[in-house]
Image (cartoon, rainbow, N blue to C red; front, side, top):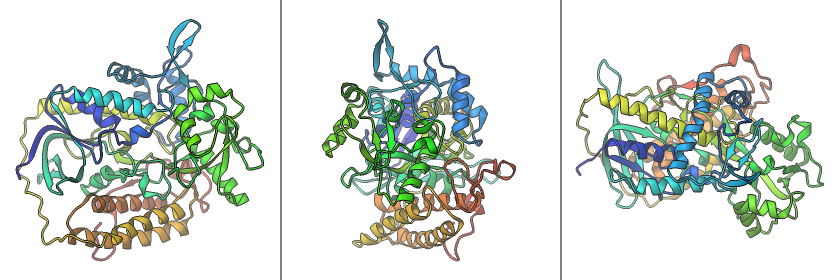
Length: 541
């Protein structure tokens, strides 16, 4: 098959990928690969909003300090300052592209409604009621559809990056192999610049707020290409997901606590004040650990979130989607508390980039949850995720634009995908069993609270699973489930190895064997490179 040729390849169709693609389409041709439909991205599941200094009562210094405090001593201050200061411009661009954030009548003037969430000292979260991500995706999707130079290939899964490795100079990325889920053919997509914007990896855990497509593909592909991966031990668990067998970990936005919701035990006792002076508005790592502690202490299946003391009309208007979803499961937010539990939510680590989104491979950029810029440190401040994705999409585009304007190098020839003697398999149970085992192992041994013994046991089993999956991968024809399983086991290994390296408790990484923060020895990023990992005998690194 002839390769697909494009100036810019974007792998992932969330806020980072689409914003980059829209801007890049003004310079050349753009191809966006999405694993599912165009609207199925982690961005679409973001309820709370995008944090940015907007009010005259707020300041960049305050937002920076809140971010540093939440990051528990591990944020990269230059990254925090740059991203926070460019936040308002990024928000204005989203508005110019059609995003309709919620407005209110404030003293006779029409203004944007600013929410407050845990860890924030001011109201600075712009939102579209409680469906902010959906609104941003709607606006960006419509803007992308109007770009004549931009094509979105739905149901296409990136397999591996196309890397040229000159003997002396820096390796260069020229696109990727991509599987069409419809035709089951693997295409070469040749591009002058490539952006990894594949989102998070929540499906590595048994319970997650993420969609099914969140399997850490960008991190796994980058790792296989030799790019350093950092801070994977810091996986954020959202404190409040609806506890119901049919809800599939439906997220209950932190904005409810920002508007006065209280966490309670089954007998009605509020408990967060015992864990942090900010109570329900404490950083997410504190709230998630507090809930986990109370559940284990009392043998509970869940705790309860109570906003029934606020006017019913206000709750229905401010949180229409959450209200309707809870009602569909038999819970009326306005009348009684709802059952909640923590679930895996956000990957604070990822592909190491500089502040322009550049990786260690030329012409390859990363932005959004896939990337590790240093903004989040050991724990992400609420609603800083969409902020980072928007700002870094803009910065990555500017860097790619400048690089391509100075470099007219042409790509080498890459061979067609060779399946070798791989055969189609009917034994789907091998894939589903391995997938389930990884997720349960990670939930039980590498969750909110960890220990050296659990982590060591998890690593041994994951290494064996990785060996089995590697053998199965090359013996059978590709499909999306197999690609995701291969990526998922790599992400699991990276999380466990990173957690084993850090002999302290900081932010989202809490271990009973090293319960204190240790700035003298561990105030640095945990970096893993493929060449540093010792594989099992005969297995892949």
